[in-house]
Image (cartoon, rainbow, N blue to C red; front, side):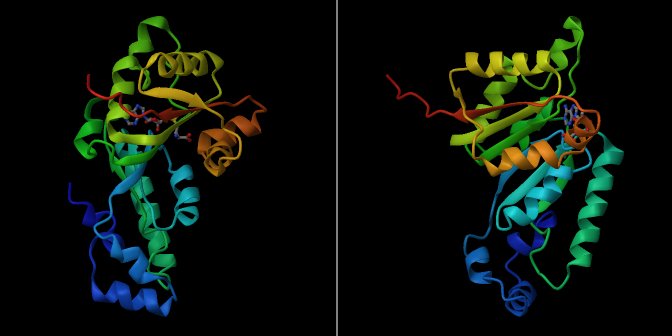
Length: 226
Ligand code: SAM
């Protein structure tokens, strides 16, 4: 992956970026010192990007990536990112920390990230696939959880939210059963508020007076080799 196309302000240490950062009174050294930065947050099945756009200013020096299987939806998010960057051209880093790619994460997630690269993975309102014969299409399973464990660093968090109680129970059951994860409290985590209120699906559920079920899982340390 050539991430510089996605995050040019962060991944290429070009003088114009440093200069505009100075004009915007941003701590360019601090932001660029760690260059090249790596994606740390993944929003799997990001849809129209509500979570990405809400997290971008809250975590302005952390690279955030949405992964979405639908081409037209991915293009919409990419165009919106371009527009927001242009609208905020005075601030060299505004929305530069967010990007979106088209990907089927059920097949290709480990192609994009190295082991222990991510600190947060969001699974917000995944498709429920209600029928039992369709459960294999759910984005939480024993096998996929091992992939999430691979790309997530110890101490990293998987955030899940859904309005379908059966799917919530399924996700809790599968993460609880996985040796790399343990459920943790959602209290006091700002990202929980954001994913509950800023995702498109979260807003839709709110309008319809539905319930939202949240569960967070921490990536445990790997046990020592015997
Ligand atoms: N997360 C968004 C939200 O909360 O508003 C969108 C939720 S929507 C119900 C589920 C999204 O997951 C859809 O945009 C769908 O295209 C995407 N999706 C489904 N399977 C996927 C896969 N295997 N890889 C990437 N995205 C997927």
